[in-house]
Image (cartoon, rainbow, N blue to C red; front, side):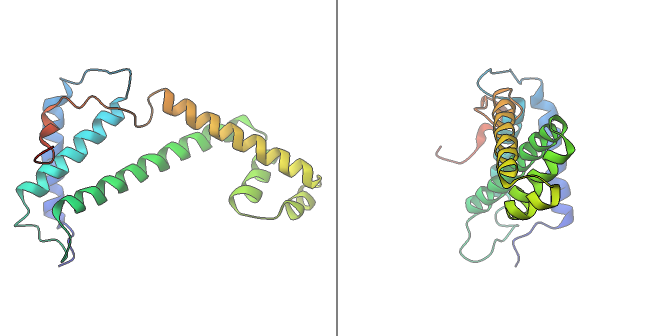
Length: 171
């Protein structure tokens, strides 16, 4: 058994989640320590925990994998998706702030791993300029990620007082 949900089970899970979310979103209270997105992530995680707990006999997992491990794995994937979305948002915003030439230098040297000397030759600048551009763009990216995190666009501490809080037994 692959441990994957069938298309029907996945559709049921999504539909159940949407119904419960509509019921509980009215109770959402903004908490300046976190964000709606963080609250939503907690809701998703807790719904997955409840779903796997309630359906563990009908959803056999691969040998040696417990249902809570499956939820943790899904939670980690969800976090990676949130992180990727954050990175893409920051990257898109910074790209608009720098010149086309500087962005291309950054991408080729920092992201694609091209040597500074080759990039410098291609853009008819010194390797020092490539290094400086790369450093400046990286600094802008770091600042944008921090700004997005502080503005509540990303995960933070969520208000966990909601109907989805059933969570893991014993917690």
